[in-house]
Length: 364
Image 1 (cartoon, rainbow, N blue to C red):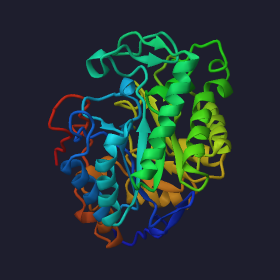
Image 2: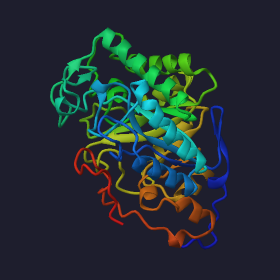
Image 3: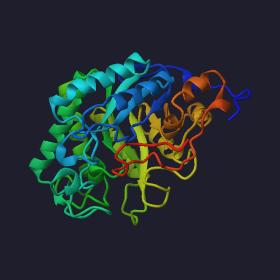
Image 4: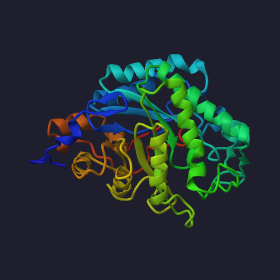
């Protein structure tokens, strides 16, 4: 990774998301650690982990998915944000990130069908009464269930603001509740929340509206979506649908769009592409549809990120697993020391998902 004469000019320019100024274009995307205490409380381990990435020069740190409803908890040690009792720990976490030099945000999340009684103590809820691969049958959400979920996201977003975070990301990607409503593979409803793209996006739109009502028009709010779904037997979200969903989200009040993907097998494990930069065509296509900033992801490094910014394929570059491996990657990049970066070897040992109860590990 020798720097040579390769200049990282655009990567280290400041930017804005809503009313938030970000010191550079490097984003740490939300990645599950399971460093939280049982019950979802913030621990010194999790606070130190995020603070270290902030010290390393990342412009925006987005804390991993925080659970908005105990019925939607996905992991045994997932951060909780569904009650005011979590606020003291969340304030400490937000403060640690900001004191270390980065802007602090957090992702809010509901697992929907991607959980089960072993984690939540009850049957999973989803848009339709079907079973997602690896999970038991879901209970179809009633109109009241949907209203409750929308309010849970809004209440969580208010806590995000009260805790001192400077922005909130709505998790509407991968294999979780809002993505399930968006996807024709999982949403088989015949009412106003199913069928057309506009109907399937209704819950996301209503969630953005509800959040805006409680946090105000100036507070940074954005959503993460799948730019495409793979391995869904032709029934997943297409890029054309994702473009429309992005426009609907922007119109509803989303200050940015973070573009990921989902699939079994096509790109490796879940949302991780087999080759660096493979998801950039998705972010580019979404960027051509919206006027708000677009975040790209997918095994990106500073070089790829700089080129993507230069070519107009994204506005922010999310560097994930590589920041687990080397928290000081951004700082080393600014100094022209890319050769000294500890590389991510894409072994995926960093994926805990209920396995090692001590939390995420890295092989390097």
